[in-house]
Length: 243
Image (cartoon, rainbow, N blue to C red; front, side, top):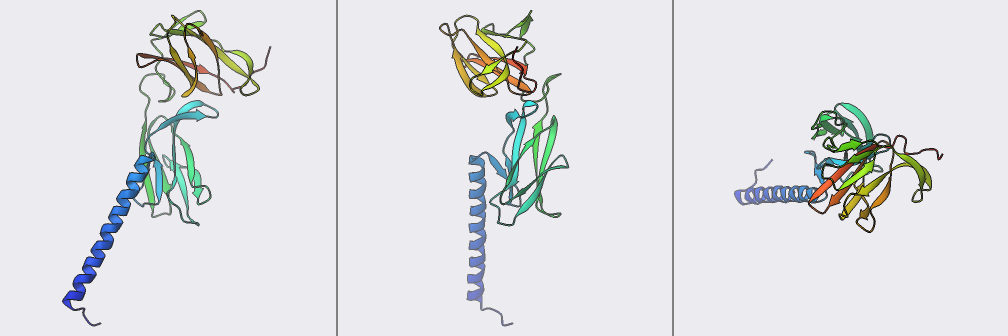
């Protein structure tokens, strides 16, 4: 093969360097776009996982740590297996490119394997922080106090019934367990259930029923940025039988 003259070789080198630079910029832009949407892209550029753990409602156990993972901009025939701590939990494809993953307590590794040789791994810390905590999405309520069937928040601004009752939930049309939450002094409290805003309590509306889903439920009552009261209730199966 005839060697290229020096000028031609120089042009080829500049062309290759230009393509490498463009590729690097494209990858940088891809990572930036991924970060903006709350995901991280693996070294292969073909898989992704959540950038952080979220607290979501597991249909059985209630509030629990969750991430998503799967194929990033997949080709039509792409597929991969998704595992948590070495155990396969899902398969992803072009038609169904992502999977919801519930993380056990502790340090977890999520792996998206495109083949035996190509696999991206992502590390997440789902370790609990105090004794008896079921998972990292359940807040510490050890400073609350219980008197008979009422639990008072450490702030003293609210209290809630301990034992759930059973009533028809007009929003779902089903009989569900519920507890009553009370404003303990006319504070303006923003009430949420499992991170979903529910209502406001104040001197004009001092209490509200809070219906429970299956598993562990987290009720919060926030007095602006001053304090947030938490209550944890087990909704069982999320349904009940009316008396």
